[in-house]
Image 1: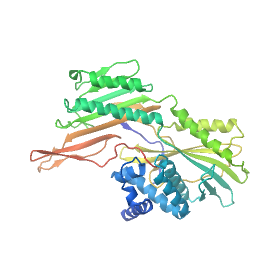
Image 2: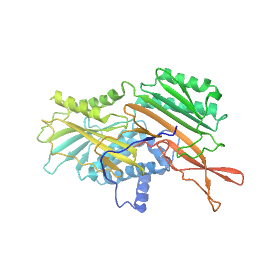
Image 3: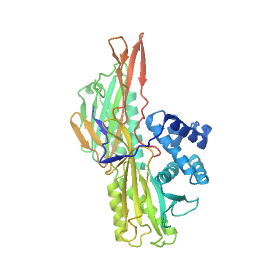
Image 4: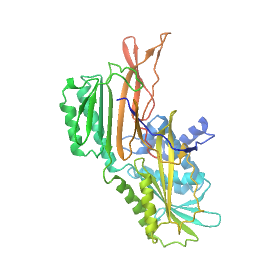
Length: 440
């Protein structure tokens, strides 16, 4: 099992921030600490996503933290009292914190783009920010965030449990273990129970380097004991290395769940009087999780607008940020799609968004499975990939030891093992457990 998950970009335009020296980045992190409070940031014991980022020390966490900090800086120049209110909501409401953080980041992207805007106070029933043009025309914008679905969250937790069960059984017998599960349909609780039984009951002598497959009408399960790590280096025999990859079709309601958020945002605009189309337009900006099918949702929104002239909104703007891998590095990518009413939304009223870091892509990102001659598009799927590979550092001619510690794919981590005076020393890299955005 050496194939890896990669997410290539379509045609893209770089928008990386320039002029951000180390001193400026440090100043932004200090602003973040001042804004949210070091005592609060250093607290432990809950699952607040901003605190999770603060405790991490990898590059992706740093980019996300600096993005939040710069959003505070930008919006403090627009409306500091509004920022204070949003910060208070972020701190107090852990379950809904991502929605409030998105409001902060999205308004800052608009402000960086040169848009004149007014964030709305609490209690505004339909929209979150008013964007004003020089001729007094206004866009009433509702900001909505749709994070990972309950179906995918449950899938990931079940996969974590499977990996833990495999470790408990095999780490005493093998120095390496790999499991590959592949299903075109959704892996429900009963199928996960079947996978657990396979782990618990498979005779150890059947799990070899070559591997053993369990044919099943619903899914395919392969177990093996690989010799090589990602990068083709031999795995260290004194440490347990594992790879667990599970590919599952999405739940039948996955995309309908995203669509319901589109419909929900539209209904909220019904709480205010219908605006004069010569003076105002109503727009929903919906941030989508990477799993969402942005093409499907944009088409569904356009159909709603075309078929119902009395719809409560004039346009939908879909924003899908994701971490993608190029040949050289991982990078944050933003993709935008727009659906608008041909008769009501003014085509000359464009809003400009400027993210702090990353690139913009003219096409949605796609997840592919690559390696060993394989190149497979994983559309409409949930993907779980976790691996920890322990490799002996190579001894150089001068007696020193060397191994590049990296993460060759999202969720895959390479650890260097050094033997020093008969003792084993393990060093790992500072890469995120999973290359997934937590607040952007």
